[in-house]
Length: 433
Image 1 (cartoon, rainbow, N blue to C red):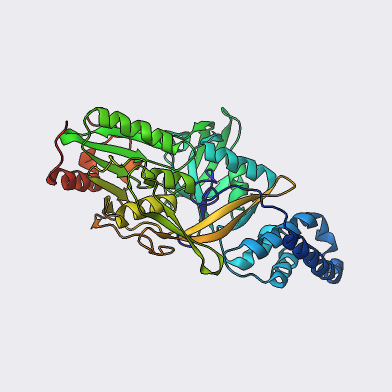
Image 2 (cartoon, rainbow, N blue to C red):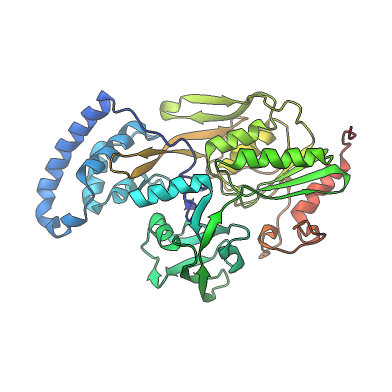
């Protein structure tokens, strides 16, 4: 992803917050000393500003939580941060997320207890809502993609649509997490979204919430000539198991080559991305994680599936981000797959979600990552080996529900899938045993 597209949304865990480990950090003596120093600085700052901000004092976050977040940013953030500047930013804005604006990092943010609980639900893939991925683009709450076969999908919501209101509440000054809390709710209840379509048309769209059980594998097909197709729409705790089941089923049917469709997949858990890459890469690096002070740690393939080395194509586009780029970059750099489609989004940062004592959490950018070949893709993306761009204004084919031949995919309307099939059918494939 680029810094202009901080994707999160109804799926807070997809694309950024879920990418990394959710962990409790030990209360080291160093952090305690930092907290004491921060407290002393903060006391001076508040004493000089209290007279002016007395009317707003009730709106300020709990000081202890402020100090805890500031200490974590100081000690764990991927780049050096001035504690003094953090505190000045907090005094100026009066909120923890206001304090974090100084980082100019849309992926680092504070999660209220409710938002943190929702994020934990995201990684399991089950929650109550309407089934869309949203983020902030050009300071507007924007839909990244609807999740297939959900209320949002069936209501006609599409990537690029701007949500201007939720049940009549303007979204102009809403945080992503606040917007998420309004869109989620009890199954069977209605929410009304004010939508500005990409063509400028405004619509009020009523949607009935459902229990959203997000499957990572949304399509699996065996085409002629033994070409298997698997569409992976997200990376969650269930992704590895679902993909393994899909691959095993296709292999039993005689699959001799594979198309892995990661188009429109905004990412998710880093661990899920590593598990997916391990299914195909027999050895060597999957990615390199570069932390503070430029110290790099290489994640090596575990060689779990040495025999799974059939010809492979990975499909990507401009909404393939984060964990999708880790997988596609690893498969490309190791020569295990050919990439087809459009340039990927370009999010090369890793977040760690750190729980706090009051039940809230902070999503903190703690590292950058490079692909298996050592490429830094942040704000750049990955260029496919074979570029197949959609015609201007054409909706991505994975948004459609046209069915041809009962397999849920209309190949005649998907030029990128056509190119992938042609590439694999042109190769000399191994004979089925």
